[in-house]
Length: 637
Ligand code: WTA
Image 1 (tube, rainbow, N blue to C red):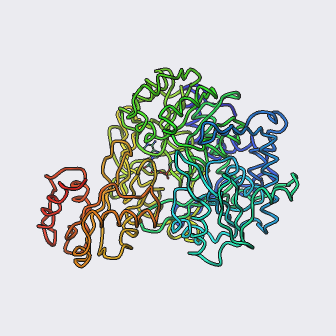
Image 2: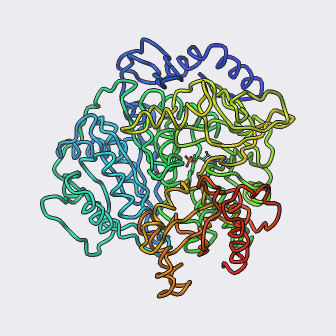
């Protein structure tokens, strides 16, 4: 099926996708290599929550990402990697070379006893081997679980244990900006915290520095590769066999392992990649995300490779060695499609135009954003200074759980509007519901964003806990998948995402549960309890504000400055730097109702700098607490 090229195509496809979803998605799926055709396109039940797409179909996703392209695109660049250090040489992999590397590493995995259904955790820097290893897992039918390199040893241990991973893939070090993350020693520490799970650690030698070693468990990546050949048949998978687990945060303290399966995820990521970005055969596409997040899975690894695209993969950060790094790479590699996060745009905006004006940016055709709401100023700056007013911006709304882009402009096809994700893609049926779960129809309305019909790449379960999946997504509003986001549908029928309505905060596009951060804070000895809220932050979108109640004996021996520093360090240790609170306020108590519920609404207002209009506070157990928190907030830096 061809791409959507104009508004009429969009209208036709959208209508078809709603009136005949099975026919619509079957036509999309026909483009791929299936070892056995499916029997049933869709079966689902939103009550007990079960869904299957292309049941009975058999395939291997890597055959579609790699082998399928060997006939016509063997010498085309699949991945063009750029190192953190601008003096280090690029590494380029054609489809033929990528195929070969994936086959070899798949054989390494097999030699370590990895079989279909086994879990493999990856804790790696943004190097080609990460993409290669992800694909190698899929080739042998193992379930990959990538853990972002910014997570701490404890966070890594929690995830490795939850997944029950047999093998851990890592690198000795991970260069990022002017820092180097000691991935291997963090991994060592993590494995000490969950003994008896991982049997083998395969270590990529990213730098020549000294690497700690556990004989009998650790092996070098390059040495293992020398012992295998380059032929590796694909493992034949059922369409609904698991492809990967990716942990994300929710309202409770424990991160959940979102599970995606094979056939539907493949069809949907390819379809959305091709249409949203309007990828054309010779385009150079660059998504700046990390493969540790869903954006990297769907739009660095799977979507682009399924479409035979040429992708840039970047190890570094936007501001190293200076704030012109992105634009230098865009000019040098003639990038046509550029996909990044609002946080990065805001950070670069703050550095000034001199870093942009040095570059031509002529190759750019399409710009994209993802991960958090984009404010108007950032949208306009991106549009004017990067896109030179010429490139459509696709503000793509989606989630780890949705697997692929859900609400978004189709580049150059749907007229855009700053801060609006615009309209649903074909196959996606969004609805807004009120607190009672009643659909709010019409235009110019706001409500809880839900999706009322299945789409191929939706979450299948949360690893090891199907009840949790059902309760989180399908119980709040009966008959719908609940996203956790608030949303406005304006007079044009356009959707604007307003942000989370649950206890999740979005810091620099990273999702964090307030309960998760509170749990970490509470682990610091001397903390009695805490409450964490988000507040507007110029660069990060949201910052983390923690209200902490300490033991009086602790307050006697430590200064407030010391306490704050130690509380922050505890969070870094338990979760990672991404979760470090921006502000910590030591308080004598939290505003609680008589039934013991923390009134977060009040805490949010204070964190935002509002000191009036708290609404009804008469149900508070001790209303004087609010005054004292307000006063204390003045002094928080
Ligand atoms: C938010 C990232 C506004 C939203 C792909 C969602 C957005 C959460 C947008 C998912 C956008 C993502 N505009 N908000 N374009 N994209 N979000 O799982 O709150 O890391 O629920 O997936 O990010 O974050 P996640």
